[in-house]
Length: 210
Image 1 (tube, rainbow, N blue to C red):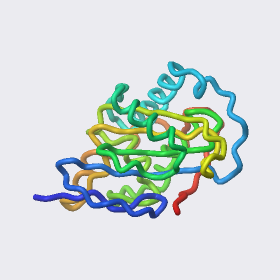
Image 2 (image 1 turned 90 degrees about the vertical axis):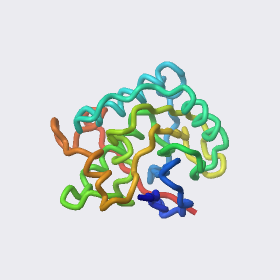
Image 3 (image 1 turned 60 degrees about the horizontal axis):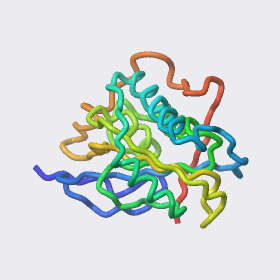
């Protein structure tokens, strides 16, 4: 059986087909408003950034009965290198990938991805442009994440801090009647679908492509 990754993203940006031997998918999110100047230590401190990104991902994974991710230093190095370009597009790398830019701290970007679960169609599991970030965040077969960030502050039209996260093994694998989504994206077992890492914060995002 041959499987292919879905050649699309939330931003409707084309992605090359890849065989399952090296599956990957890239999804993108960006704020819809002009970013304020970030001051959070979750961006300015390496250790605080790692802690915040892991905690935010595992917040959503716990609510969907997925095991906690560990930090992948190799993926983090790759993510940081790509973020350093300040070019808001897919890297085309070998792992799953989520992008965000313009948020005031690291957790808010993950909240934007996680809140896509409100739109996920549990009656028809599968990939959707509106929920691709969420499904990657909680994908059960993914075991590690590594993220990087750069203060682009408008360089190449990338607002604020640009965050790139790489996931291994990658999620959002399509094929076999969407059985992979049934097996890897589980319903919420605790909390509410409006829960966010930062209590009282509702992140708003839109796709962005060129």
